[in-house]
Image (cartoon, rainbow over all chains, first blue to last red; front, side, top):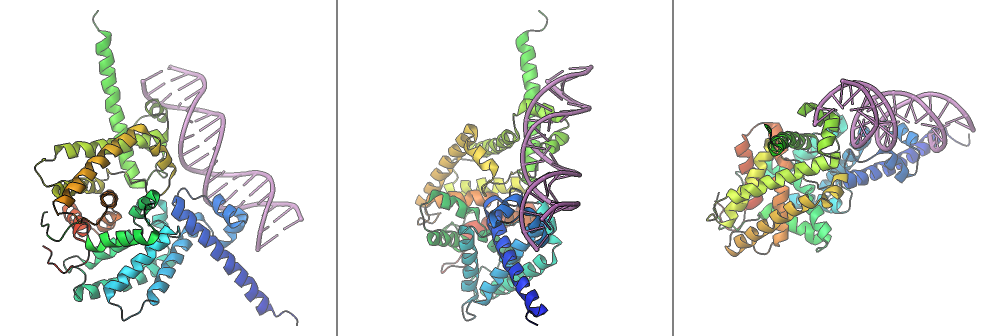
Length: 210
Length: 210
DNA sequence: GTCTATAATCAGATAGAC
DNA sequence: GTCTATCTGATTATAGAC
């Protein structure tokens, strides 16, 4: 037997996986550039360089395409979290995760966060892989948030949930888009500025106005 | 002459204006709920209770419809700014404007901020009324920001432009959407929480806060 | 001036050739 | 398995009746 069936299957599966990666990466970029509604399946197929019908052999619908892209990002975030030194203070790890996401956004690889009630939101909320990845990340981040509060690095009267949402929102902050349009700062400077406003706030500590 | 032409014209113009207001208000809400792409002209016409063709006698295109809604919000913001007591510190006025926008968002009356490069963005950037209103508000807010920095209430090493963008972004903060979904807080509590994270930041500092 | 009905276009999804 | 060609439905915009 020259070709063992398992070998052939494995090779084909590998190719298939590679192409799916290329597809999902393209979807990621187009989602970041245009958002879900404005991203067309034709554009995805054209950029990947395959026929639209071939796309549909990999993903049954446009919504699943987007969900796969979101899951990919979540898994990347999770992997990045795994790589952070455990001896770092929890606050430093939180900053690092948000900074990583901001850099991804500036690189055009961070799909928009589904804030407004789009058709996509319902799909994502029914997508078990997405929910699992999001839940896992949220649980870990919440643990870090509580730890940072215990260590006195995050303000304790803010509910952890509020801090978690704020970090998610800052990871996709449109301020980065505006600053990038101005072109006055490097990517690193923009990330530092937005991180600074996020953790330190806009106001001075002396102001006590409400 | 029983009916003076000017009177009839004025009355008709008044009716027309009233209907345009109803249209724009509906557009505002649908933009807030669904975003530009997902808002259909059919839906607008249906909610207003007129035929789609009648809509097109008021506004030549969907894009102009959205632009009118954005201009309406900007004019409302401007009017709100006019109504703020000038003796208030600049920081208090800035907080009040952002708080007003947040309440509008929670009430479903704040159309999304055109952050991602949508088709609408190009239209708005070519819409003179929109640019004029946005420019006027930005100039006034920047003046308040600089004043607050001079008074020591806003951190001086942050460029005013960065603070301005941050305030715009917070006025449409998706954190409000997430908190609202949880349903744990009143509108006022949510606004206070997000304002707090915006101006005070998430982190503690060496100096005591509040 | 408003509405019904329709044109024109575009996007998501699929059938069938190879 | 991939591509060309097509279907189906939705959406923007308009023509023509009243």
